[in-house]
Length: 352
Image 1: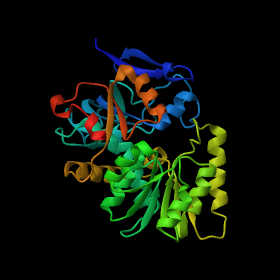
Image 2: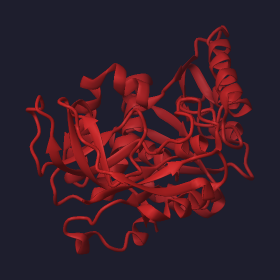
Image 3: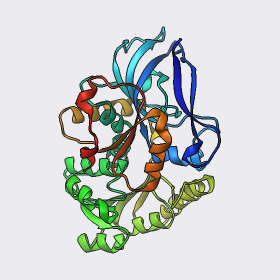
Image 4: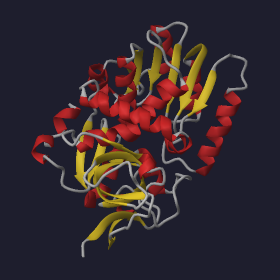
């Protein structure tokens, strides 16, 4: 009988703490489908969870991974909106996507055309959906406005830049010097965070400040992003990673910091975006937004950057790459053979 290969964190630590485990195939309950996973996204939350710094993750042993694409191969008795063979993309708000097979409620699934690249579609679900939520649901950004995007060559950052450009928004993006070409090609004006003060650079370009800023770091960095805003501007925090791997104290301090900044008499607003909880709270928005992103990808309006596609059993290599800080865009785990695989080879140039 076929087994299910999955990646498990048995104890906190470096990437070697990701281990392979083969179990029996999972069985969907009456409201679930079973998906043969094609691609699973690798995100910074996975890194923090493996290091023990992500309070939203289960305690070990657990399987990381929020986002995936796959093909439905079994359906629960009460599922009527999907069929065996459907190609689907989804966010699993409970983690667990580093796996060959996954059982999940059909509420979290959206179909995509099978001719689309599963790796590119996978990047929509966490990276682009987070960007979409922050731009349009949180900051209510409008054409002609200005924004500051940190880590503009990263997975969420590059998605923010692309979606903002489509909306007619002017973008300043921070990145290290070696990633400036990527930021420029995406359509943003780059700021070298290693050698330039991004607050000063923002005000040099836009003396009153930007309409919105998006910060994944927290702490003093969040306070400086606040200074880059114009009056009535919006700052959206979407992580408290700090300089390392987060932690309960870092997250609690970050939440308190957001509250304190909102008490200042500046008319600026600070919001927080945690996509998994947002998805569980508003499934209708989630499915509509993700469907819209799939259509944009299908029409060639967005172009996800996939820097590496790595076999599932080499998940530790994917984590090493992401932790190195040298990558751009998205790293994806290949969990099963892609349909029409020859059409989706050589992702490297996509990141160039």
